[in-house]
Amino acid sequence: MFITITRDTLYRIGAGAGVCALLAALFFLLPQREQAAAETAAGAQPAAAVSDWGLSFQTNGQPPAGNVSADELRQWDAYYLGDTGEKTIYLTFDAGYENGCTPAILDALKKHNAPACFFVVGNYIDTAPALVQRMVDEGHIVGNHTLHHPDMSAIASQEAFAAELDGLAEKFTALTGQPMQKFYRPPQGKFSEENLKQAQELGYKTIFWSLAYVDWYTDNQPTEEQAFSKLVPRIHNGAIVLLHSTSETNARILDELLTRWEEQGYTFGRLDELG
Image (cartoon, rainbow, N blue to C red; front, side, top):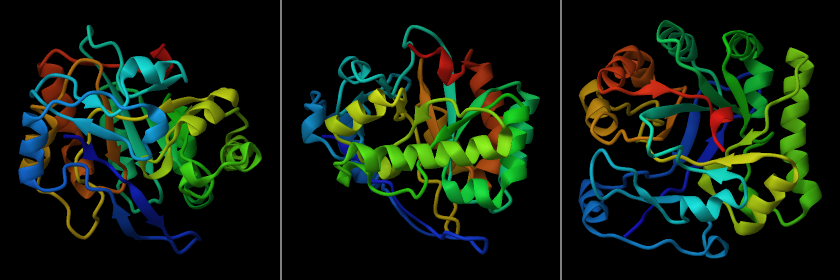
């Protein structure tokens, strides 16, 4: 049984954006479904039949199975895992808007000399340019989460698909004077085989994830204990970790979380080391 992840985010666009009204994406759904997923093995499905990224966790400390295998994804320069023979973690943050949590996250990353990739949308560059510049200045990758955060799997036209990625990249370059590194995360975790090909043709690596938890409801944040209970035992070699930069819990725990992972022998890698 796969846990289907549908990260359907509604971002409030404009200078007044301060809340994310909806991020409907039940990564772990209900506790009983988590248990069922851990107990039930499932094989990879063809990418063409998939529209939502999904994972099946069977054993704590071991990489989960994706609903498309790592080998199949690689033919389209897409990844959800790094090298599972290495104790390396790849930190990624989805950043749809800024609510004051990102500075503490950047402080923790700097303390641990841990690189990360922040996947931003157009609204984030418009409303938090100083933080985007700080990400760049401190050596982090700023990745492409599209200009408007649509369901990209519903876009058939290569021209329209490219406009979402190119429009965001143009904003980034106008702000920083640098070309955007070509890492793309599909909004809402929605994709198709055609999407993967379209991104590849534009020179992008598509980045999914192998570990996340429900951290996006700003008015219903997990406790620190709940966060650690999900993120510490399930960490694994080559993990691509998805966190949200809007999470107050993440801002509070990141320093300790990175310390705990380091104590387990993990180091932090960069997405541009994938290949």
